[in-house]
Image 1 (cartoon, helix red, strand yellow):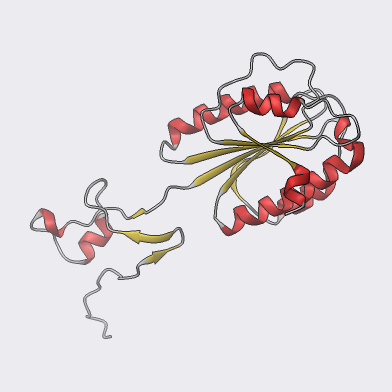
Image 2: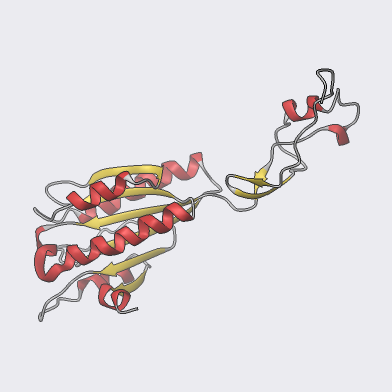
Amino acid sequence: MGANARPRAGRLNNGRQGKRHAARSGSVNWPGTLLNGRPKVRADLLFQLRTRTPHELWLVIVDASASTRRHRALSDAKGVLAQLFDDAYRQRARLALLTASGAAPKWQVQGLKASSGLRAWLDELGAGGGTPLLAALNEAEHWLTVRRKRFPAEQQRLLVLTDGRLKECSGLPALACPGLLIDIERGPIRLGRARQLATALDADYRHIDDLLSV
């Protein structure tokens, strides 16, 4: 095309976030509109494109307390997490990762896209210390509430990996999003508290052995 050719908006149907469609309202896409010439009527306006599905956020809380050393509990949980990270990468989901061990919970990732760097962190993850899981759940509730105000259309999901060996289960927060608790308790004597915790959180329950046998 010559140097005097009139530029036009592209016609691609697929963006990085999946198939898109033109919006009929909202913010005006002025660059795209003006590339078609000065608008004379409303029909000439182009609006910002929107994805058909909102982003997903997966909030993962990992209990890495000393009790999860027993019977390969944390080791097998790391295998489940590796698969989860791969799934998040393929589905372009954002991850928030919070570990519960030692004296206080600690954020590892807060709302970022899954990356290969998570594998290096996972390889170094070890168990030790106490179980600040209740503190982690309360921290997660506060963080999700703040994020929900910034991204109201975002689909939030919760995943908790724990053996449920807590001294206290009262005062649990309402996280207000779909959740799954994976019970990693192993050994001949099981307290079964993880199932009770899942019920209190209104989350689905699965034992890790059921996942590994699939």
